[in-house]
Length: 239
Image (cartoon, rainbow, N blue to C red; front, top):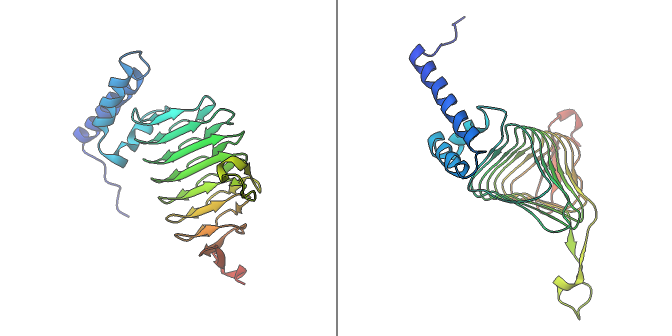
C-alpha cells in the first residue's frame, strides 16, 4: 500500500501563512470603515470564482462577498456559508425569514426573495449554482440538506389570480397551493422549475429543463414538461 504524499515543509508553511493572512483580513471585516477594504483584499487574494470557497473554510465565519446585495432584517447565516459575488437576498415588507444552514454555498447571480409572510429555509451543505431564483411568497420554500442545484433553477410557491378580465393581473392578488419542499439529497438539473404545493422526495433526481407541477416520490428520476417519473434509483422500485 502506497503511503500518502505529504507536501514539502515549505509548501505547508506557505499554506499555513496564507490561511492566517486570510483569517486576519476576515477579522478586519468587522472593523468600521476598514471592513469593506479588508474584505475586498481577501476576495482578491483568494483567487477567482470558486477558488474563493477557501474564504468560507479558513474559520467558522461565513463568507459574504462585499459585492453581494443583502436587504433582509431576518437573515440567519450558518457557519462556513459561502455567499458569492452578485448574490441578492431581499425581503419585502412583511416577509418571513431567510435561513441558511452550515456550509451552504450560493453562487453568483442567484436571487433569494421573500414577502407576504413567506420564508426561504436551506439546510446544511446544500449547493446552489449560479442564476437560480428562490422565492418565498405567501408560503415557504424549504430546501433540505445536501441538495445539489444546477444553474438556472427557479421556485415559485405562489401564483397570480387572473379570473377577473376587468382588472390587470397584477391587481388581482396572489394565491398558493402550498409550500415547496425539497427534501434531503435531491439533485436538480439545469433550469428545473418547481411550482407551488410541490414536494420532491428525498434522494430524487429531476432532469434538466423539467417543470415540476406535482409531487416527486423519494429516489425517483423525473424528466419532462410537466415532469413525470421515468424510473427509480433503486431498481427494485421500478414500475
